[in-house]
Length: 312
Image (cartoon, rainbow, N blue to C red; front, side, top):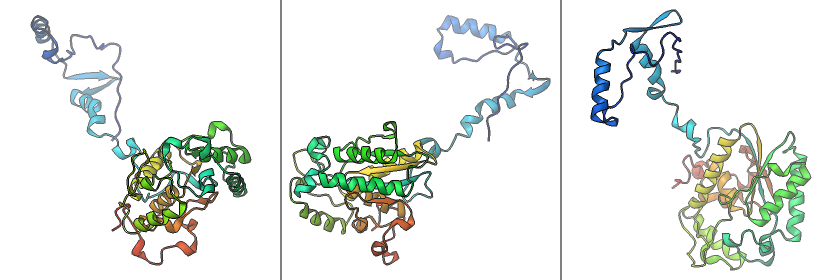
């Protein structure tokens, strides 16, 4: 119900003694309170107020002033709440994994956020080539025709990838929006510094439960479960879906897990199967139901999840 707004004519000022203003007695001292009461008692409150030639009953005026309290806006609209899977998306999304990093070239796991802006976390020569190919693919499909926004993790290789994508697609630097935490590479805890081959153990645990965390470590590297990653990417989508409408956004992640969990959540797939959606370095994927490769589409409804990450 819309709020009704009325204007009092100049002939009925707010200071008129015919319309006493009631104030809580607690905010006045006893002397001012008694004088106010004396003044108020001698005043006569009118039964109605003339407004624009019509008579408006006092109860209608009170209703008009309080209707916004009685009928508040939906809290979901006001807070920009976002749920997975969404009923609809306000924007078009391209998910991009940054090209190979220097650490990946060496075959070493590096997920400690302390080092994410280090030059050593940047793109390798092969990673730069992979990212240029990704940028050209985005240009081929017209991702940034009519403009787009690029949201990279502040991790060195992701931001470098964003700059390459922007240069190839003619996007101004003002449309590169660095994300400081929600797109961090998944923290693998005690696996930090080990061979990349060790991630197979992590994914084996993911297939059992999205809540299983890698073993912890005391060097500051997070040990994140798939559910933890899911919370981060859901918060990111809540920001993007609230801040933009009808736009194209290119999300650039330093690793695959952020993107596979995000895509699984958007499509309502069981998070335990997120690995089936794996992104290779420099891979680009449009977010829609047809973006899942046929070979990785779940064979049955067993892996469908309508309320991720609760898919047990």
